[in-house]
Length: 289
Image 1 (tube, rainbow, N blue to C red):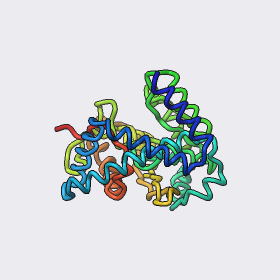
Image 2 (image 1 turned 45 degrees about the vertical axis):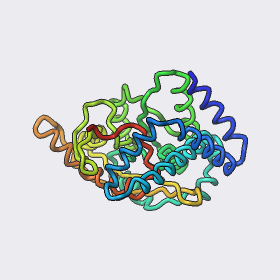
Image 3 (image 1 turned 30 degrees about the vertical axis):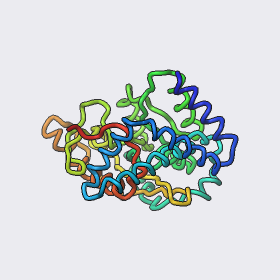
Image 4 (image 1 turned 90 degrees about the horizontal axis):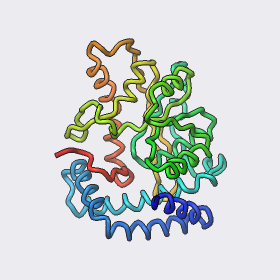
């Protein structure tokens, strides 16, 4: 339960001091953690070497320390969700291509808002919800109930509806059939039942959820990313919808159908990760040897 106590302390501090000071404290604690986090340092270095085989170790290490610090800021933003208002979003978040989201909704088949572990996906969900869109997100359930409740309540506070991953299929289909938004993260498979595709030139498992739901319902997939700018404001970037023709059955060539859809958005993931490597928060070994 140590994590829960740390989260509560982190939230209390972030809520009661100015944002800039909270960021400075977060960077300080991140740098302290960095010194002792041997496993995390090695894992991140290995991941970045796959993405940037042409870069020197020195260059990659610079990206790595920035990534640790940016993740600390990400936590501050999440802890301060209760302070987030429409006015603050209008002031600090630039939204690009919102019309793509509206175009996808106009099809009346639901919309899969697809992102990756890039930038501040939690904030992205809050921005979309505060803009008046009905959004549900799928989230893993933490093994400790208090920790899980903490994260769920933070999201619900900003109008983000949470679907536990363990019973997601039926609820996700309902959300899409009601022409609402379904938020999914698509750059990491946690089930070991994914589809193998090359990612940065090496095979990895992609979750089948985004492609599978699109094939089942005909919902558009709208790749969406929110990234931190140098001034600590944000840009929410909405990409052109990926339109998928619904497939009644996946029995014949099911994997190939899934692979065809996944291949369309994995390229977009690669582009964003290359552009914002210090905001791709992947502390687990991403590729198998």
